[in-house]
Length: 445
Image 1 (tube, helix red, strand yellow):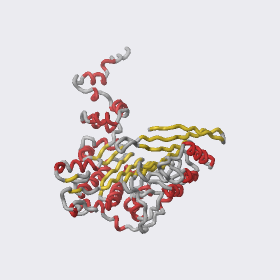
Image 2 (cartoon, rainbow, N blue to C red; image 1 turned 90 degrees about the horizontal axis):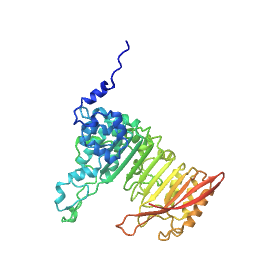
Image 3 (cartoon, rainbow, N blue to C red; image 1 turned 30 degrees about the vertical axis):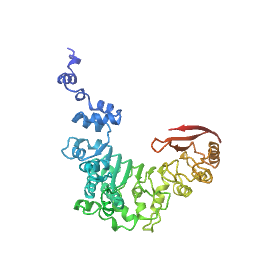
Image 4 (cartoon, one colour; image 1 turned 60 degrees about the horizontal axis):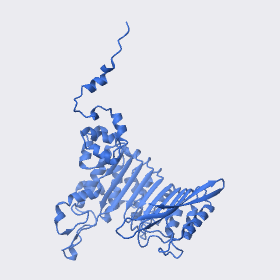
């Protein structure tokens, strides 16, 4: 007798679904695979709203590639015994909580005082360093981090001390082998002003970390013992073999096309010494340093690192001929160059003759630059489009056989209170054999 075919209505899955109470969310019935497929297509804002719906939604949101912001609450959820402890391996993107949030929360009590508050008031240096140390230690919970966003504030003279302490805290953790993108944002911790106080009392912020707890002392100690780049890197810099992209954002960041002739300026780039596969580098700064201090240790190790960069994107407040010469010398193998300048009185001191130096980038495929000014470097007299097209033509004839597009941007503003309008020109290169055609197009963003 043939075996009885089971009724489709009696399948275990359907029976289990029918047994659910009617008021139960459909999220409790859908398999994780379906939920993850849905969550991966959500916008970041929607994903964060979804994560607040329930414990299961919160857990699922991390499987949907939501990045994790390191707060005391989120860290506790992933520690042993936490509701998300079993999801550690699925966390691929981690960021430090923005330091302004720490400082704003700490200063709420003082918000009605007579003090003119700067964003850093209300949190001691020791408490600030404890936040940084706790976030750094928490990174070890997650073995498969692919994107890491580090941000912190520190007094100017202690920024590099904290920077190296964070790097040393990463050493030995599994995620160092999976990290592909690293972003470091360093903000200066400024003083506050007491508007009704005598002049000698107005600045109430130490320039360095003092009166620290033993834990914080141990976190930052040992850096002054190193007088060579190699010894400092050996102790403080982790190996990052999978890292391909890095971004550094800091006020007073020394530009690598200048002379990195001292220990302090070279420290910003030390992590690149242990990241042999970095090809994309983004740098953003205002009031960048021009280094003229006494040489403190050899920084030749950076030369080979910069030569491996293929994609360089810089945003700063100034550019001149010496800067371009430094770029050509240190980044000879660039394929993509985006060099932009903040709006300001001394933005660009370059004419098309200065831009001719870019013809040395023989592998260049794309370049975006500020709009050149007149030969006498008068920024109020920009070069006309016809002259720019002639320069692009000369650039191509100089042997840049891979160049596909040139963009030149000009920012204008009706007043200081209106949004900037970015206008410019793009020149696209169409090649047929050994000949080429330049297509000009106006752009507005």
